Amino acid sequence: MTTIAYNRMTKAFFERTGAVTINLTKLLTRRSRLEKELAQIHAGAKVIIEFGGDNCRFDWKNIARNVNGIHLPKTSIEEFHSTYKKVIDVVKEKGAVPVLLGLAPIDSEKYFSFIKDAKRREQITSWLGGNYLYLANIHEKYVQEVKRIAKQEEAEYVDVASIFRTSADFDKYLEKDGISLNKAGYLRVQGLVQDIM
Image (cartoon, rainbow, N blue to C red; front, side, top):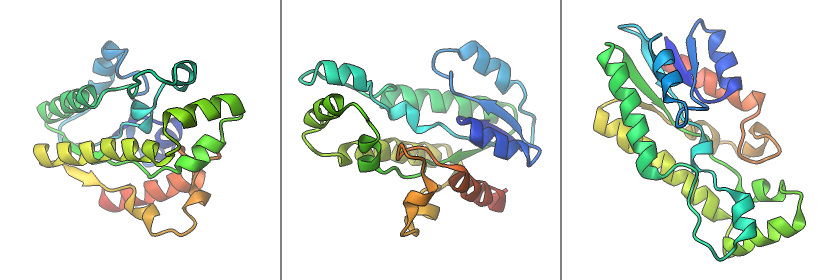
């Protein structure tokens, strides 16, 4: 099994299963590194592809400076789709099997309460029109895009969010920022992936 992992904690967990891990944190800016890492994939391997929620993050500093401006996520949905597709193509060319890993849900209110600078939080809230759920909606748009890609490519999709939606106390699996999984959260993801591998 090969794991293309976005998060260092994910990487550590999957390494314990004997997986080769590839960190895609710099994917969109360091494509040469990506190509080198993709070279580790071998025929017959199941390759777990995970793109972190950082792709749909906004530049909050710029938003706070220009509340009336037009602001887009760090990675456009088009670039997200294109990059994902390229990685899947390489995996298939190598005779390996792509497995697309979804994202865990986020807690928008917890995320914004984590912003310590009250003035910046107020400016960002103003840009959001007071609707904290906007961030969760954008996040979900990227999750749905991964599902769509999985369907188009006839690839297996692992619905990570499903193991958390049934938890009334989902917050206990999140870091204080409301968007990052903690150790307990990653253990649940690890268990889910091990079940399907």
